[in-house]
Image (cartoon, rainbow, N blue to C red; front, top):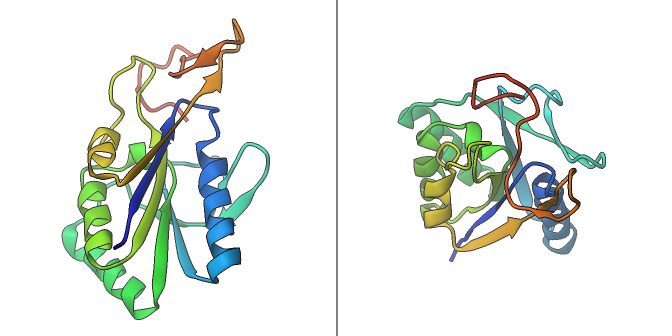
Length: 168
Protein backbone atom coordinates (compact mmCIF):
# COMPACT_ATOMS: atom_id res chain seq x y z
CA UNK A 1 0.00 0.00 0.00
CA UNK A 2 1.36 3.39 -0.95
CA UNK A 3 1.49 6.17 1.59
CA UNK A 4 1.04 9.89 1.81
CA UNK A 5 3.43 11.53 4.28
CA UNK A 6 2.88 15.19 5.13
CA UNK A 7 5.66 17.21 6.76
CA UNK A 8 4.32 20.45 8.17
CA UNK A 9 5.09 23.23 10.59
CA UNK A 10 6.07 26.88 10.59
CA UNK A 11 8.74 28.68 8.60
CA UNK A 12 12.27 27.69 9.51
CA UNK A 13 11.24 24.42 11.15
CA UNK A 14 13.17 22.18 8.75
CA UNK A 15 10.35 20.86 6.55
CA UNK A 16 12.31 21.01 3.30
CA UNK A 17 15.44 19.60 4.91
CA UNK A 18 13.47 16.61 6.23
CA UNK A 19 11.78 16.07 2.85
CA UNK A 20 15.20 15.97 1.15
CA UNK A 21 16.66 13.71 3.86
CA UNK A 22 13.79 11.23 3.39
CA UNK A 23 14.34 11.32 -0.38
CA UNK A 24 18.08 10.70 -0.01
CA UNK A 25 17.50 7.88 2.46
CA UNK A 26 14.95 6.19 0.17
CA UNK A 27 17.20 6.56 -2.85
CA UNK A 28 20.31 5.27 -1.07
CA UNK A 29 18.49 2.27 0.45
CA UNK A 30 16.13 1.33 -2.39
CA UNK A 31 17.54 3.01 -5.54
CA UNK A 32 13.95 3.98 -6.31
CA UNK A 33 12.98 6.37 -9.08
CA UNK A 34 11.85 9.72 -7.70
CA UNK A 35 10.22 12.90 -8.98
CA UNK A 36 10.40 16.33 -7.31
CA UNK A 37 7.83 19.11 -7.61
CA UNK A 38 7.79 22.72 -6.45
CA UNK A 39 5.33 25.55 -7.17
CA UNK A 40 6.36 27.89 -9.95
CA UNK A 41 5.73 30.91 -7.71
CA UNK A 42 8.51 29.83 -5.32
CA UNK A 43 11.25 31.91 -6.95
CA UNK A 44 13.85 31.60 -4.19
CA UNK A 45 15.79 28.82 -5.95
CA UNK A 46 15.44 28.24 -9.68
CA UNK A 47 14.60 24.66 -10.71
CA UNK A 48 15.41 23.12 -7.36
CA UNK A 49 14.18 22.44 -3.88
CA UNK A 50 16.73 23.73 -1.40
CA UNK A 51 16.87 23.64 2.39
CA UNK A 52 18.21 26.51 4.46
CA UNK A 53 21.48 24.64 5.00
CA UNK A 54 22.10 24.23 1.27
CA UNK A 55 20.87 20.69 0.58
CA UNK A 56 19.28 20.77 -2.88
CA UNK A 57 17.58 18.56 -5.43
CA UNK A 58 16.47 19.35 -8.96
CA UNK A 59 12.68 19.91 -9.04
CA UNK A 60 10.11 20.47 -11.74
CA UNK A 61 8.15 23.69 -11.38
CA UNK A 62 4.38 23.16 -11.49
CA UNK A 63 1.73 25.86 -11.90
CA UNK A 64 -0.32 26.60 -8.80
CA UNK A 65 -3.49 25.65 -10.67
CA UNK A 66 -3.80 22.71 -13.01
CA UNK A 67 -6.61 20.92 -14.82
CA UNK A 68 -7.42 17.25 -14.21
CA UNK A 69 -6.36 16.22 -17.70
CA UNK A 70 -2.96 17.85 -17.16
CA UNK A 71 -2.10 16.13 -13.90
CA UNK A 72 -3.45 12.78 -15.10
CA UNK A 73 -0.89 12.96 -17.92
CA UNK A 74 1.85 13.31 -15.31
CA UNK A 75 0.55 10.29 -13.42
CA UNK A 76 0.53 8.27 -16.64
CA UNK A 77 4.15 9.26 -17.27
CA UNK A 78 5.13 8.49 -13.66
CA UNK A 79 3.73 4.98 -14.01
CA UNK A 80 5.34 4.51 -17.43
CA UNK A 81 8.72 5.59 -16.00
CA UNK A 82 8.35 3.51 -12.82
CA UNK A 83 8.42 6.49 -10.44
CA UNK A 84 8.02 5.13 -6.90
CA UNK A 85 7.76 8.36 -4.91
CA UNK A 86 6.80 11.93 -5.71
CA UNK A 87 8.19 14.65 -3.43
CA UNK A 88 6.32 17.98 -3.28
CA UNK A 89 7.67 21.06 -1.50
CA UNK A 90 5.77 24.23 -0.52
CA UNK A 91 2.40 22.52 -1.09
CA UNK A 92 0.49 25.36 0.61
CA UNK A 93 0.84 27.41 -2.59
CA UNK A 94 -1.04 24.95 -4.82
CA UNK A 95 -4.77 25.20 -5.51
CA UNK A 96 -7.35 22.49 -4.83
CA UNK A 97 -6.07 20.23 -7.62
CA UNK A 98 -3.11 19.23 -5.43
CA UNK A 99 -5.39 17.25 -3.10
CA UNK A 100 -6.88 15.27 -5.99
CA UNK A 101 -3.48 14.83 -7.63
CA UNK A 102 -1.96 13.37 -4.46
CA UNK A 103 -4.95 11.05 -3.96
CA UNK A 104 -4.60 9.86 -7.57
CA UNK A 105 -0.90 9.20 -7.03
CA UNK A 106 -1.71 6.96 -4.06
CA UNK A 107 -4.44 5.16 -6.04
CA UNK A 108 -1.83 4.52 -8.74
CA UNK A 109 0.63 2.98 -6.25
CA UNK A 110 2.93 5.98 -6.07
CA UNK A 111 4.10 7.19 -2.67
CA UNK A 112 3.95 10.90 -1.87
CA UNK A 113 6.01 12.94 0.58
CA UNK A 114 4.76 16.51 0.76
CA UNK A 115 5.88 19.47 2.84
CA UNK A 116 4.28 22.82 3.49
CA UNK A 117 3.17 25.41 6.00
CA UNK A 118 0.11 24.31 7.92
CA UNK A 119 -0.86 27.86 8.95
CA UNK A 120 -0.40 31.37 7.62
CA UNK A 121 0.84 34.24 9.77
CA UNK A 122 -2.75 34.82 10.97
CA UNK A 123 -2.75 31.25 12.34
CA UNK A 124 -5.36 30.12 9.81
CA UNK A 125 -5.02 26.99 7.65
CA UNK A 126 -2.77 27.79 4.69
CA UNK A 127 -4.23 26.88 1.33
CA UNK A 128 -5.19 23.23 0.99
CA UNK A 129 -2.71 21.94 3.57
CA UNK A 130 -5.56 21.14 5.96
CA UNK A 131 -7.04 18.79 3.37
CA UNK A 132 -3.67 17.16 2.82
CA UNK A 133 -3.35 16.57 6.55
CA UNK A 134 -6.75 14.83 6.47
CA UNK A 135 -5.72 12.36 3.75
CA UNK A 136 -2.20 11.74 5.09
CA UNK A 137 -1.15 8.34 6.35
CA UNK A 138 1.64 9.90 8.39
CA UNK A 139 2.01 13.48 9.62
CA UNK A 140 5.26 14.98 10.86
CA UNK A 141 4.74 18.31 12.65
CA UNK A 142 7.90 20.34 13.13
CA UNK A 143 8.51 23.45 15.20
CA UNK A 144 11.02 26.24 14.91
CA UNK A 145 12.64 28.44 17.51
CA UNK A 146 11.18 31.88 18.25
CA UNK A 147 13.69 34.56 17.31
CA UNK A 148 12.39 36.78 20.14
CA UNK A 149 12.17 34.49 23.18
CA UNK A 150 14.06 31.37 21.96
CA UNK A 151 11.14 29.12 22.96
CA UNK A 152 9.59 26.57 20.63
CA UNK A 153 7.61 28.28 17.85
CA UNK A 154 4.57 26.61 16.30
CA UNK A 155 3.53 29.30 13.84
CA UNK A 156 5.11 31.86 11.51
CA UNK A 157 5.30 35.53 12.38
CA UNK A 158 5.18 37.98 9.49
CA UNK A 159 8.05 40.47 9.55
CA UNK A 160 6.87 42.76 6.75
CA UNK A 161 3.75 44.84 6.17
CA UNK A 162 2.76 43.13 2.91
CA UNK A 163 -1.01 42.53 3.28
CA UNK A 164 -0.90 39.43 1.05
CA UNK A 165 -0.94 36.00 2.69
CA UNK A 166 1.74 34.90 0.22
CA UNK A 167 4.93 36.87 0.75
CA UNK A 168 7.95 34.98 -0.59
